[in-house]
Length: 194
Image 1 (tube, rainbow, N blue to C red):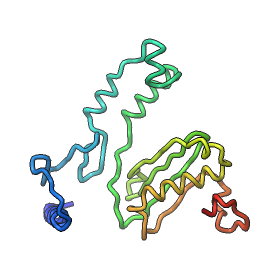
Image 2 (image 1 turned 90 degrees about the vertical axis):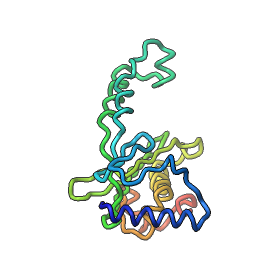
Image 3 (image 1 turned 120 degrees about the vertical axis):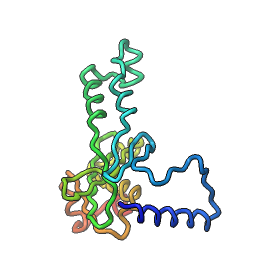
Image 4 (image 1 turned 180 degrees about the horizontal axis):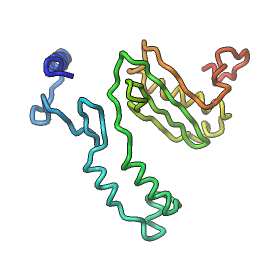
């Protein structure tokens, strides 16, 4: 947020590293910069956005020209799906840095093959994502009833984002109505109780 706070954070981190006998490579460290490229994203004081160099690569992806290329990149997707994917990647929302003074919102959903979650906050400029989580369901999970898959999506994100949510007030949003009343249900399956 400001230079003094940045220097205090650096001192704190370096002290934690020293206390735990961990070392960093000075050549790989950057201090006092306005923006930082990290894992394909650009981190600034305004938030996190997609690295423009990565956007150019996506923008210049060639349209698959034969069945083998289509299968290897998008499976059996049509040309329209490829264009939609490109546009989605090019217009990815800017990620918000977490603000522990704001309420976190967990949005969870499940399909028959995967679960997906997004952690968001509203800082007065509309809801913006902080991070995303998704994973494919294994064979057993794909046979769960829908309400258990939806609950699994919530559990996965709570475990993944424990570092953000533990001790905090947060809201869980799901499109599955039966989960809204789960705490009032008298009979739950053993899997749901677990």
